[in-house]
Image (cartoon, rainbow, N blue to C red; front, side, top):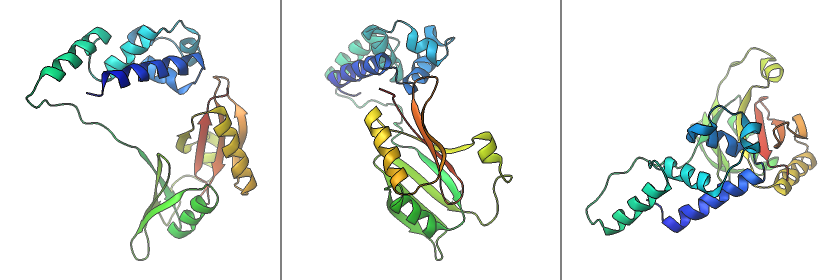
Length: 215
């Protein structure tokens, strides 16, 4: 179990995100807290959300019914010497993009979007991975069209969604991409639910969404 003090800090962070109307947190609240399950994103962000609610969210995330049960469990675990079994912890997520040229795609994500090329595999390469901070993108060589021509743009079919932490970050990232000549499917805009987003097109017309809070 994570340190109780760290869990308290996480609860305060969720409370702060709710007050700042950071839209992605609404989905977590709706999925974990039953009393918010019937509300949409705006309804959740407009609802009264207290520190006790944030603490309950944290407790339920790690398998307890409420914050009091979590604290009791934490105390018991500090006194317990035998090993315990916990659920597997998911460390990261990687989106997989279908591309026609591994090297060209690696060059695009490195030179235009500031990613690092972690590896390429095969001779000639048919698989690779690029990353930037905690965002991972797997690149998979496919030598024929995967989607019906034009459907991705018409239906806004995203290949990956990447979030940043602040309004300044999303604006700076957009301006950096703009200066690098990155093609946009959608320029920077404020969504009805409060997030600021933009969508770039890579060499294979994959739609990559970048999102952050509006304030």
